Image (cartoon, rainbow, N blue to C red):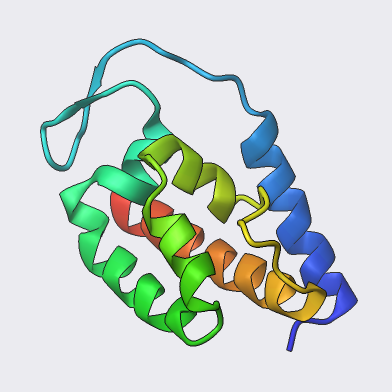
Length: 119
């Protein structure tokens, strides 16, 4: 389970990711060579170099979300999915315990993606 200090640290990092400046210039991925505009979206939802982590993440959350919540998440575009992983509400709305678990799992996934991408 996630204690208050751990949850506070997770929310601090997520708030930093939410509040960083958005850049919409074309860039080339250092790992896959694809052109993207928003680096965080590319790393988390699009880059082939993090696809295995995405698959593992989806397996991990499958038993934590209701089927309609999981389907709602999967039907979103990459930008919307990234926002959901950063804590934007998922329809139908998650209960408090599931939301905390989802945010914690999402945070771990995001950290793994960023480590793999930039290492």
